[in-house]
Image (cartoon, rainbow, N blue to C red; front, top):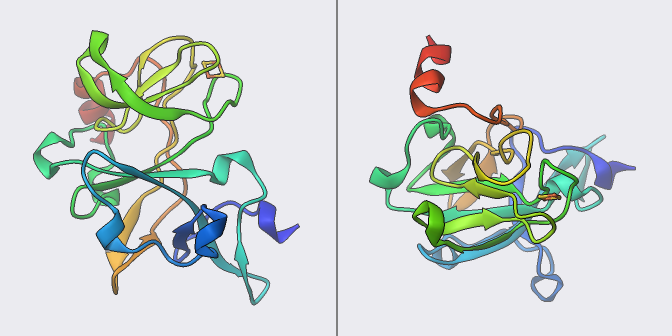
Length: 171
Ligand code: FES
């Protein structure tokens, strides 16, 4: 079914909150220290579809001061400090929540309630703690005409990648 399609370039992020009728997420609602839950919406076979039918497409929109965003974040896939990740944990697929994780020095991390997986959203979703075998998938975006627009497929980092290793891999 079309709702189960993965995000594609050009999709617009819309509110996951049913009270907001899947309207495009307003930039004014994306603030540092808060998150917005979203789905991608785009054309499938010529028809506009909210792609809400798979867990991977439940998205977190967060915002950080740009100087805090470091490789291995896909810096090309961020705009105005806005980063987007899937909520689907790479361990066994629970939906992550966003909260502080002080023991790793993270003020705002993606934390899995099932087995304690923790991902650093300022570093490309790199695994900061727990059992996940790979990083939280980051969805590259750009702000276009006041909307958050998908630029590429999900990107997920290997478990134990370091910043330095990531820089090497890019070359
Ligand atoms: Fe997330 Fe196990 S499902 S840590």
